[in-house]
Length: 93
Image (cartoon, rainbow, N blue to C red; front, side):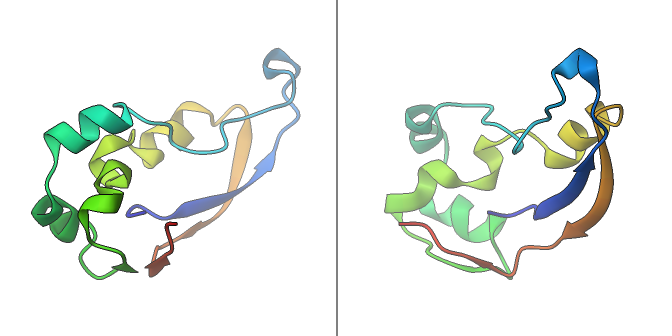
């Protein structure tokens, strides 16, 4: 929602069954995120990104997720980074 996306090319590493992460992954549960963050935090963390900014999506706040850049760096033996895309729009149901 806030740190963008990576386009990667798999390296076919047999040690990982030729797979890699499909995203950053959560560092806290949805309920923990709702307790830890407010709508004001959501507005701050998604500044410059067109998205919902209400209590219904606080659990999707960027702060509830692991750092995607660190996740990508940790799997350099699994993927080749093609491009990093910056988020400008995020649609949550």
